[in-house]
Length: 87
Image (cartoon, rainbow, N blue to C red):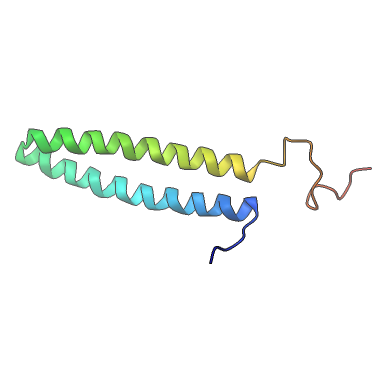
């Protein structure tokens, strides 16, 4: 059964995924250092390509999370949070 979330909750899920992506990037950067020491050129190329994909995915996760988090801020839609002082 799927959990219903508001946009801020969904944004937090994307931010959490970006943190996991950062951890994967760190692991692969360490692997890249080892491969450079061992001069394993095929593996260096493979890991570099993987890192490009991981960085792109992380950037997309963060863009989506920020979009969801700020969706109502710039849309002109009045929500409970920003309705306080609006007359």
